[in-house]
Image 1 (tube, rainbow, N blue to C red):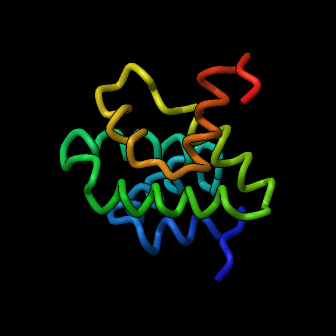
Image 2: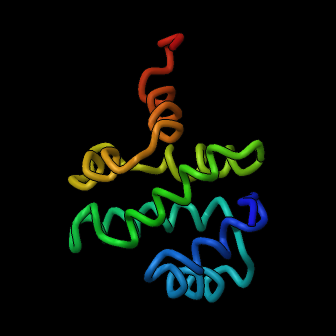
Length: 122
């Protein structure tokens, strides 16, 4: 199955341990799926998991692999979701930021570099 903006939530639910509960809490709170808000929830969840279980734990590893896959698609709406609502919500002052950063693939890393160094033309 090709990953798209419309399918990423279900893929996260399918492969990221603990995400199903997060998704249920999100629907209970908002009464609908708000993908950009849910990505912010995913950030907070992964930072917590990295703190408590380590950055190489299954939830972090699987989520980062899926997000990298999303950045490798041609789906610009999916790129925007991951960039604007996942990468920009990563709190650089959080102790788990660098361990999670180290789990990023090349596309996620490159996009994050653009956020961290906005004047850099590379």
